[in-house]
Each structure stands twice: as structure tokens, then as C-alpha cells.
Image 1 (spheres, rainbow, N blue to C red):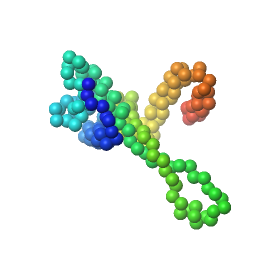
Image 2 (cartoon, rainbow, N blue to C red):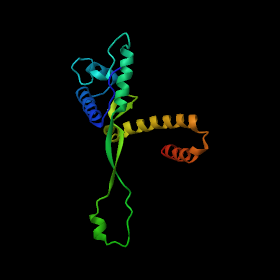
Image 3 (cartoon, helix red, strand yellow):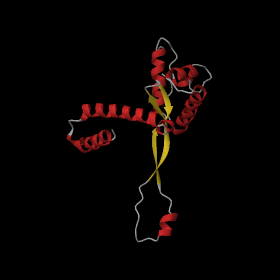
Image 4 (tube, helix red, strand yellow):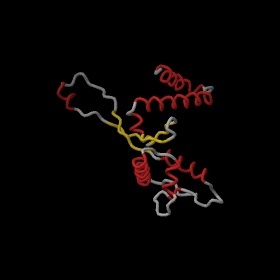
Length: 168
């Protein structure tokens, strides 16, 4: 089997390679990743098993999908601001909101196009975002079916239901 992503640096370089494939083709699919990786000199080549006795094309497509899903990006999310009302307005105006870093998947699979899109693009497009939310809702329902009987998850399940079924 090919080499796994071991460090943030190699993950970042894979992200750049996937972004390049997306930019050149207008989409990112497992097939395009395998095609790109099949060249012996490709930086993606080592992530795949090329011995056809051990793995055929369909297996390499699964390897490509797994590679795409493993890539994460860092996003900066603002922390909630707690204001001390005793402070002067000037101090509050000049204060910069603190941020926290979070790792999120860099790519989202869009069923309608059967391809992956950069997560920033998906979140910035109302139709793609709605499709991703529907996918999340399906995942949520599957999670509930599998784990809904656990009392320890009662609060989480109630909150998830509130989120998914109030959105409609």
C-alpha cells in the first residue's frame, strides 16, 4: 500500500496538489486523482498501490477518495465576545475579537456533481451549502439510528434534532 499522510506539512502539500487538479479541471474526482498519481514522477504516486495483483483500479479509486477525505485545513473561528459593561466604549471598540483555530476537512463531496469541491466554495454557495446540509442530515439520522438508544447521548441527540429539524 502507498504511504500515508504523516505530517501537517505533507497534508498541506497534498491539499495544494488536489487544489491544482481542481483548478485545472474545474472539479475534483477520484478518477482525476488516480490519473494524476499514475505518473511515476507524480508527488501523489506513493499514496497508491500500483501492483495490479494486489490492487486494481477500483481499489485505487477508494484510495483516492480516502486521500481526499484525509486532507484538512485550518480555519479561524471567532470566539464569543463577553463584554464587561463597566469598560469604556472606546476599549470595546478597539478590542479585536479573539479567534480559535479548528481543523476541518478541506473538501466536500457533492452528490449532484459526483465530485469534490473546496469546502470554502461549498460554504459560500447557497445551493451547495444546502446540499451539504442535506448530506449532514442523512448522516445525523444514521447516527441516531445507530446510537439513539444510549442515554448518555440524550442531550446531544436532542440538540442535533433541534438543529436539523428547525432549519427546514
